[in-house]
Length: 222
Ligand code: BG6
Ligand code: MG
Image (cartoon, helix red, strand yellow):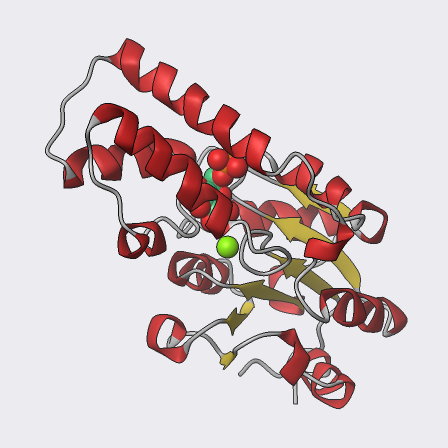
């Protein structure tokens, strides 16, 4: 693990700050059903950290389906409308456990905080869960041209914070996100299972097991 002291902390959104995968799953499944395609919970796992466009491309390939570009665009729009209606009533009660404690602790240690998400809905979601005021920078799917595992989203995050990449630590739940953080030259902490995230610098099932002493160790590069 890198020994550089960390000055910036970059959080992924979906699966790290809020469990949106269940809503993405319902929206994609409804869409797939409307087209006579199959889409399972196992398929949904493979879409974590994957952009909306790439997700639809994968669902098409799994179903060996070919559609016109017009229908492709219409389905992307329809999926997002379904997703937005599912998250309409989301509020701060949907923050994943101890996310706020961890953010507040990092702030107390003088770190700057950024969001680095593939989602084009990241800003409204951050607002819904009442965390926007804690973020010094937000980089999301509306800002980047290359999806994770490309490091673009995290490099933009570090730049927006004015902190060098090696002084940043990333929290991610997707394998491609861990790869992206490493490609950016950052420490990558996995939130989830080691089976998926074994290439991270450390993996924790959730934030409740990362106590304040451990957060200090991460920041001090120990
Ligand atoms: C990622 C999610 O954060 O954002 C993916 O893990 C999702 O499942 C992607 O497809 C894009 O999200 P959105 O909100 O732009 O459709
Ligand atoms: Mg994620």
